[in-house]
Structures are given as structure tokens and as C-alpha cells.
Image (cartoon, rainbow, N blue to C red; front, side, top):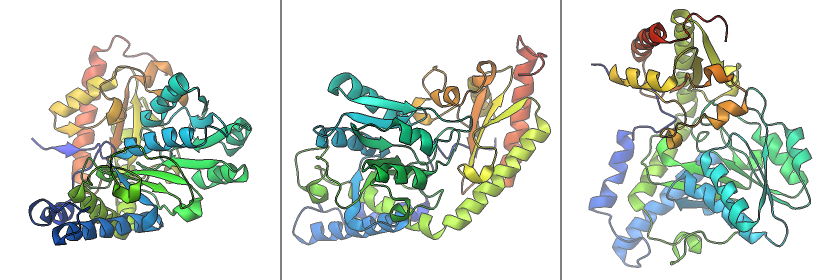
Length: 392
């Protein structure tokens, strides 16, 4: 049976070039990078090289890159660190209703246990944040604004440069979770004007278990992990050297291949959407209708009269892997907070599937997947108690 993977926003396969780069750091260059003898210095050289590669992908100085275990850690660190660092200045954070749970849940934690006040901004029906709404939410107690670069469910690419300019106008730190944006949209932190930016390697064909935080020079916040002098005394713990090296290689390949990757993703995404519209009726696209304003690989589609989870399971039986939302919350039966926030009608919100193509996806994969999808949708609608209902 053919296997077709269409959930690249959940994770990506680690590319062979990345694995080859990592292997010596498990078998030969295994020294502790904090050690001063030769094996340690060799390992440190690998870290330094990777730091430069990640910095180059986002237009940063390598000294502004701090490696973490993942994007979630970077998000938590920013929110908790800035809340602690600036607690004498204020206790107000602004974010949005469609953030990843790494942001939303941490904000809720800060509200409950640390007396922080959080404003969760509304978005429009395509998921966009308004700079005017952001400015209106600012108070004299606002110390941090955190707005994601690209939404993980509906693919909306937020106007980060404009939003960061609002923050700068009021002298407020601006953070963006760029986990879905990295390697999928051009990023230049200096041009965007962001102060802090979260990243993860496994979204760009790198290894899992390694992420990074861009912290602009001059931004101060306390360490999140204590117990050592690693990462220039900003994050304790022996570095995941092989993972960091893999992240560096993946970042270098993402930078070199960015235009090709975006073009390939957009072409296949459009092809898939055309095929879905041709072969399946009663479908709804969620997120920006203008494909140039969304993640180049993302399609978030609602199918009326049926459940997305049933679609997922039957497609899996046919060898096609998709998602009903972000992988981090796929075990939950709760309605997607993102789809609810963009006001997807309740009668179709549960019939939603996210498709994301990637570098290894082919048109033949799309043909197979859409044929399987059409059969699955038809089968489920045949047994649906509301089949035949007109409209949405």
C-alpha cells in the first residue's frame, strides 16, 4: 500500500544530509563542549558552526542564538522570563486567541499563579491580527507582546513587521513564535523588528528535541534552566551537541533552498486544493483565501456532515497521514480554539482536516491522497445522519 505523508506542519522527516552531519558527534566528536581538552573543543566548534548557521537563516548575530530543547521551551522561557524580569514595571501581557498552546497555557499559568493580566486579542475570519486592535489593548502595565508568525492550524502569516512596530512605538518587548514560519517564509529579525523569536529544528527537516531562541542583544531576562554555565550562562545543561549540529545543517539547507521549497510547496498545495474542489463537494477552506498570505504548504479544510477524526482514521488505513489540528493537541477532543476564534460554523468545525505538503511530496502522492479522501468522505456521508442537508 502506498504511504503518503501530508502532515509536515506536525513534523518533518530528518533529511539524510542532516543525519550524516550528526553521526560523528555520537561516535567520534563526542566530547563535552564545556571541556577544555581537544575532544571538548572539537565538539564546541560544532556548536559554534551551528549557531552561525541558525543565525544566518534569520539574519541574526550568532551571539543572539540560544539553543533550547524545543520551541515550547523557548516560548515558556520568554513569557516567564520577561514576566519575572519586568515585574516591577508591569504585569500585563498581550497575545492572541489563536496562539499555540505553548503560549496560551503559559499565559494562563502566569495569570493563575503569578498575578499576570493577559489580553487575548481577537482575530478576523482569516486569522489576522489587527495592528489597530493591538495598539488599543496596550496599557501602561504592558511589558510583553507575543504574537505567532504563522498559525500552525490555518497557516495565516501575520503582519509581524507592522505589529512589532506598534510594540516598539510604545517601548514594549515583542516576541514571535516562529516555529511554523522558520524555513517556510523569509525571516530577517532586524527588518521585522522583533526582540525575541522561537524556533524548532524538527519543522525544517532537522532532528527532534532541539530548538532555539533568538534574543536580541540588549534584551535581559533570567535563565530558565539553572545549574551550569552553558550557552554563555543563559541556559544550563550539557548541550545536545549532535542535535544542535543537525539543527545547524537543516538551517543551512533551509536558507539555501528557501525559494525552491516555497515554490514547490505552493505548487502542490494549489494542485491539491484544485483536486479537492473538483472531486468533493461541500468543502470549506479555513484561513486566508489569498494563498500568498498563508503558509505555503497549508490547507485547512472543513468537510460538511462528517467528523474530521473519522476522516483521519480512514485515511490512515489507506496509507495517508493527515491531521485534524496541531499535533500537540491531537489527543484532545476539544473543539479547535483556532477554528472557533475565526468563527468557523459549529456545524462543520468538527469535520476539519489539515493537510500540509513538503519537500518529499509528489503530484502522484496528491492524486492518491485525494482519490482516497474522496472515497472516505463519500463513505462517511453515506452513513451520516445529516447527509443531504442543504447548505452549511
